[in-house]
Image 1 (tube, protein in one colour):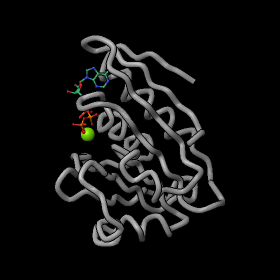
Image 2: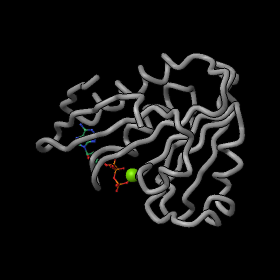
Image 3: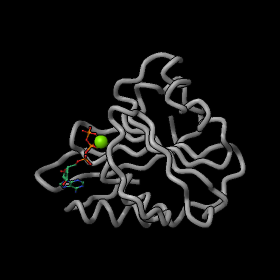
Length: 149
Ligand SMILES: Nc1ncnc2c1ncn2[C@@H]1O[C@H](COP(=O)(O)OP(=O)(O)OP(=O)(O)O)[C@@H](O)[C@H]1O
Ligand SMILES: [Mg+2]
């Protein structure tokens, strides 16, 4: 599915709607793999996602920390933790362990949103929701949703 957005606010609103449509997922963590160039809007989308999950804390880019965890209020949809991951600088299996991402991936009650997901593709489960954001012009983006790897 491809959706065109014309502003940052439309991206936020779309992500919020998407978050609200997440239903309990029986098998393991729900991984949302985001792709898109620098400034495409990956973090913006994740901010909307977090809002849609009821998280009130301000989502800041986890660039240096690589992984940030937020508690999902009232454990919406049965999910307890929301992880925001920036895989830009991740490479080794050691990074996966030291950042806590490996634990998150073992936690069935987690939602894990990964920026630059392709960089750690082989460490992610086979089933992920892929979101590819492409910069069109100024404030326009196309957002592609798919479940294929
Ligand atoms: N339609 C849009 N959707 C999202 N962001 C937009 C849109 N139009 C303009 N922007 C602007 O583009 C920038 C997107 O920044 P954001 O940090 O979300 O990108 P990113 O993909 O996470 O980048 P990075 O690769 O550096 O992590 C913001 O400054 C935002 O205001
Ligand atoms: Mg970002």
